[in-house]
Length: 200
Image 1: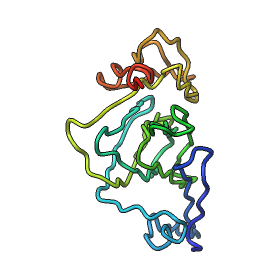
Image 2 (image 1 turned 90 degrees about the horizontal axis):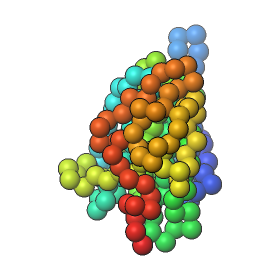
Image 3 (image 1 turned 180 degrees about the vertical axis):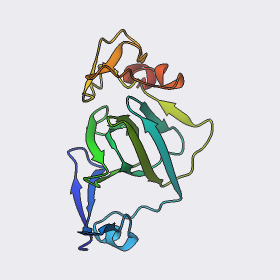
């Protein structure tokens, strides 16, 4: 292996991947993906699509998932700083409804692999952030699902976020610690909570 370090997270199916960074006075070089190294680490997923987004401070995207065509995602930040979150939605999982979060930055160059069956979201903590991710399945219009980012049953602790839960995913009652308002899509402010979305 050698080029990457893989750490299993407390929730099965989540992995932190740290590539080897070669740096000198000129800058740095890093191999961001190597199929052989991943397979030697036991990660045998196949990626079919790469995506990239740019967001300003306070943007919160999520929590998103695909219902019939779940995606595994390998995510990283190439500019700025975000707090990235995965929530276990796998039926029958002993950690169903639990979450795990990690700060991804252009400096730490950590990557976060989120297996199929998780909801995903992130919050931008820097002035601007560029976010890249590889997917194991294509985006399927009409198949997208979501969860309220602030559902108290899930209980995600978003760093630097202050506000009062009013029973909905509306972000207007929340601010970052420096006063920056949360910026969310209209759709992301209408998702329901875990109990409402998954009625077993």
